Each structure stands twice: as C-alpha cells, then as structure tokens.
Length: 355
Image (cartoon, rainbow, N blue to C red):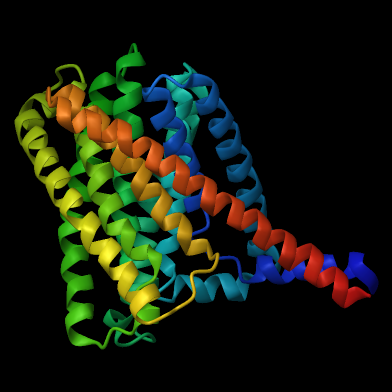
C-alpha cells in the first residue's frame, strides 16, 4: 500500500520492530507520580495520571505482544544484548507500580492480580536475563555492556516488595506469606544493588566512557536506591510477623542509608548530564531512555515522603513533597516531547513521504 496511510502503517511497524524493551519506564514514571500526587492530597490530578498509566500499560503490552509474534528475532536479540536486556524488567516494575496505585483506590483484587503477574515475571526474568544477556557465551566480554539499565533488575525486585507490603494490611488471610515475600524480595534487591553497582563501576573503570555512552539510564542507579527506601518503609509499617519482626530494625536503618546515598547521587547525575550535553555538546532530543529520569525523580519523592512519616523525619518528608512537583514538571516536559516525537515521526514526516 502506498500513500500516507500505507506509509503510516509501515512507520508503526518499523517502530514496533525496534521498540525499546525499557519503554515500560513510561508507565513506571507516570504511575509513581500519580502516587506522589495522591500522597500530597491532589487526588483528582493523581487519578488523571493513574488513567494515563493504565492506558500506557495496555498500549505497550499490546505492542510487545505484536513484537513477539512478528519480530521474534529482534526481540531475541534484545534478550542477548547486555546493553538492552535488562530493560525487560521495566515490565515488572510498571505492573507493580500500577498495582500499588490501584491499592490506594481500594482496588484490592486487580492489585493482587497485578502482583501475581509482576512477581511471576520477576522470578522468571531474574533467571533468564542474567543468562541470556550476561552469561551468554556468545557475548564476550559482557561487562562492556554494563550500564545503568542493569539497576532495573533491582527496581523490579523492590517493586514486588512495595506492592506486597502495600497489600498486606488489607489481607484477611495469608499475611505471613505476604510478609515473607516482601522481606524476601527486599533482601534480594538490596544484595542485587551491591552486585550491580560493582559491575557497573568496573565497566566505568575498565572501559573508555564516551559522552554518548552516558545515557539517562544511569539515573536508575538513584531510582533503585529510592525504591529500596520505599519498600523498606512500607515493610517497617507492616504488622508483626516472624519475618518482619526479625528484620524490622535492619530494614529501617538500611532504608535511611539508601536514602542518604541516593540523595548524594543526584548532583553526580546532574553533573554527568552537564558533561554530556553542555561540555560535549550532544543534543538533548527525545529518546525512550528519558523516562529513566522521570521514574527515579518520582520514586525519590514518594520514598522521601514515606520515610519521613515512618521514621518521624519531617525534613525528609518535606523534601519528598517538593520533589513531587519537580518530578511532575519533568514528566510534563518528557511526555510533551514524546507526543511531538510520535506526531512528527509517524504522521508528519511519513505523510510528507507518502505525497
């Protein structure tokens, strides 16, 4: 088919074929800012963001299903690419973030279903991706592909802990099981953060880092600390259960340490962005990886809010309230850029080609 309509269809097919596996960060960022707005009492705005997160999840899930059936070889190539493979964990985190937001509305059954999907996917991908993307003998040395996207593995683990801890107070039965899952996934995530940090630092020290390599995905390093803080704060709030009682003090103290380190990372990441875009003049244009900035900012806001309230640290809670608006402003900029990018790429540019 020729003409604008055929050109548009071809453009969409090409976009699906090369769809970034980390695009669910769009849902993550939108969903966590919805939670931030809810925490700050702006329920109407929060519900609008919640609706956008659900719509984005549905659209991206459909596009990934399309890609699985029509472009399996390209999808498989992403699984074996250390630079892109960990992006698949964004599906886990996005699903759990939407579930956590649904729990705020009292939608317990949908939240439980989303937890089941997220936890099962996290469990499967947690073994598949390290093998295909890191331990795959055909990709050597895999360390050269280590980047900030590897921290999404941590985020996925902690997202399971967040949603489980959020649902535990609403459960009439099985609360000990929920407590076990929450502490288990939090502990795995905490250890994964240390392991991934070592690997990413080793990559930075052993391989030359070009300005083009320092993409926004490195912001996930901060986002991973923030969601670890949020998961820890939610676990501390849980009712007494053997697993919670045994770890509450450790998790509470560790959450504060993670918050301190995540706060320290923010100026470092801004300095890296300056080095990339100002010093080396790399243009700042829309790219799917920009959503890797929005989620960490929103998660830092929510984590600070909860940590401030749970540990009675009012200044931390105030920081969270301010950062919620910073995250929302950043979301508006990136979302507007995304819409304009889609319009110019899929409609205007392809339409002119068709004529």
